[in-house]
Image 1 (spheres, helix red, strand yellow):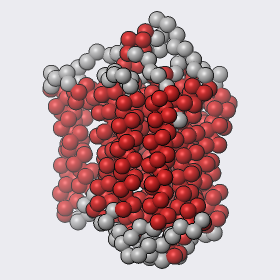
Image 2 (tube, one colour):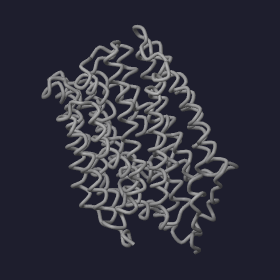
Image 3 (cartoon, helix red, strand yellow):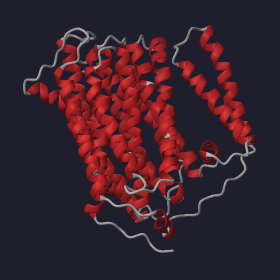
Image 4 (cartoon, one colour):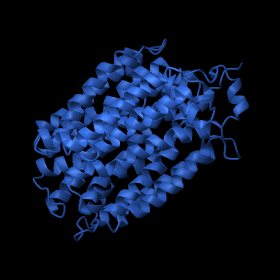
Length: 490
């Protein structure tokens, strides 16, 4: 066994540069899709349901792409073919989204766009584990966070900047403003160019060489999962009980998706306990059932963290437009000024995230991975809760400091806590499975946020941000259950 060579700063820079473009597209989606939906006639209460496509797509796509990329080797390499395919498809979706003639078309394009982003994004996480020795992995994930921050700043600011130089920011009924259209066009170009940079500048280790390094770990054999029926039976019964409750009380139809997910995963775990198959589905479900203990504990941290982020992304525009700019009319100048200011706020938290990516390695050396993540999550929680108190929209920039630190930390420290526990041969599939705990809370948020707002908060989206703040506080508490890796403060 040989030690994996350390890479230079610029090699790590080139390896992570593609994330600039991926996050450019992701930030345009997060900051503007709710606006597009509302402009095309969606009610505020319907927006979470329309956003279900995004996390649901990731739940399916990422583990499959991870499994396939673990087993891929061709002229482009192992992970890079997926970077490129996803970038081309995302670019096409970005060009089409702002030209959607109807709400259902925009919803379908969101599905396609998110699937395409996931095809590129998932292998990038495994790419860091493939290319870097354990000591450099925190730096690699911090570099990804830096590019995420920079890309998101520019992408989130684009509509506002375009309006400043005279591009029309108001469209007719059912139309999308030119500021949004041109931002999406530029985003497609940036995404494709930056991913091509990584594909062309960074070679990959062949599978046999990767397996020879001392950090490769041993690939666990297919083991018995005879006890999986207990988990499966519990999930299936919960799903079966939820369906008549939703129907009887006429609850939000999005909850049927939650019930369906419980039924499907329950059935899969029951099947896992009985099958003798060794195919892709069996291996992925077996890896999910036998996931490392660190991943199990981090799952709760991710669940609460990403519930909060999803609330931020889907409800900030209607919340700020209504509370801080005094308008719910999507065709009014006040609403569109508020929507553009949300773009500025999103740019701000991503700018602070880029700065946090520089500070976080110092925090880790000082306090360790676990306590650093807890501090950052609580800063984010305080930032979201402050939306209830602040009325001057300019002061919301201060709230974004905490959100930015939480965002940078969520994108780096859980992966640093996890990566040393994963075998190289299964880095892709485990990173894909880890994505379950990003997707499930987003599906949960899409299913229940509208219901909670209607039942307890008179449909006011500002309270979704407050729930997100409380969720980040809970995520920080769950971090205390995760073991601190040896040497993380060296």
